[in-house]
Image (tube, rainbow, N blue to C red; front, side):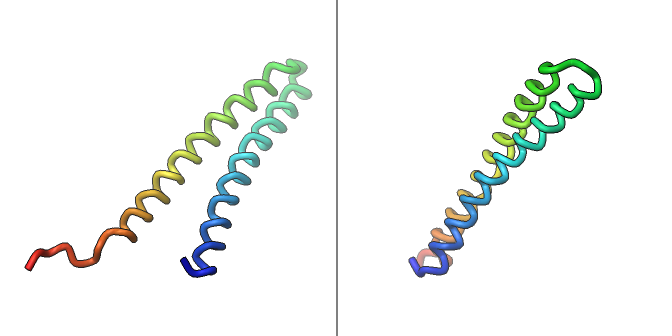
Length: 83
């Protein structure tokens, strides 16, 4: 595996982790902000974390499935015809 492909894969996987964490944090702070406006602390904060975690996992699973599909396509021989 060339060094470029190694780093490309590393960046793709680290991007998944950062996106997952950012999704949870955005929903957390959104829920916290709404709790402050509505006086419902900690209800919407907890709800925001749950929604963020679920949506983060959905994104993570879809992205990993797509990456797996691309990997399988790249490993498949180009010419599958039998002579």
